[in-house]
Image (cartoon, rainbow, N blue to C red; front, side, top):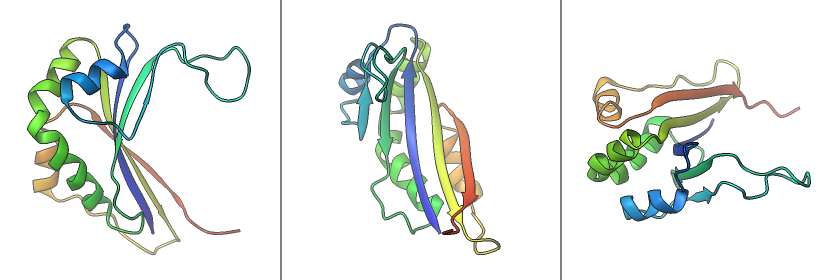
Length: 133
């Protein structure tokens, strides 16, 4: 089983990733600004800013543990995160769960779901096979 979770804040209204970092007093795992090059194709530039905080837990653990790791860092900043949403930023929780067929169930219990609801953002689950072929 391979798992991971990232809290993403994007700003397509002119907001910057740098502004997110300043307001949250929290260093992102990665940050990208409008106008920065995207990929290797010349002339392709980023149209939205993106601020990412990813769990640094090992990728073989439970998805819930990755979400708890993120929540432990973001819940104390909840008011500031909601302020960003009110300013036009968009947030989501991007989660990866890659497993061999019928290997593992993902459990997100009610207390974890209640914690997630204290912060903005839809929960996105990218569930895929982890078969090596």
